[in-house]
Length: 138
Image 1 (cartoon, rainbow, N blue to C red):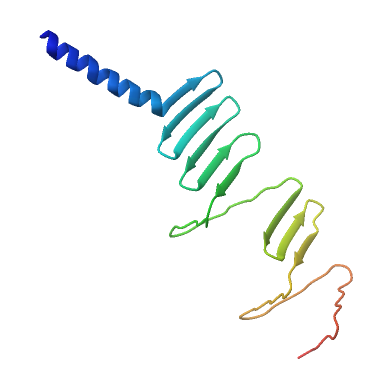
Image 2: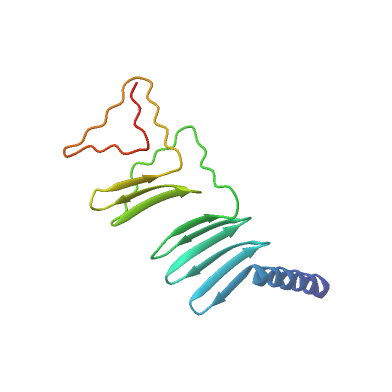
């Protein structure tokens, strides 16, 4: 290989290595791969993936966080189980559903509308208490 070709090849390899060093960072206890504003960060305790307002962290406590709307889209979505050992809460504005391990469930909302296309049943092994300003029957 002529010296000029060898020099050109070495310069090309240096350029590629410099580019790779900007995208890949390795330090004690951390590896980070970046591409623009997106990144993957790995540490001994977990992994973090960031891309365009989307964040996934997997570690002792895990989190999926989106900077905007979060949409699951598929022909079918199955949530086989959501397990929480103490409590599970779902909230949106002033409305919430809270389930506790003791079996109690609380639904809070300004307006609760239950619609059944066929039959609706409320059963209680103990007392069934209805409270309201006025209780109206059909």
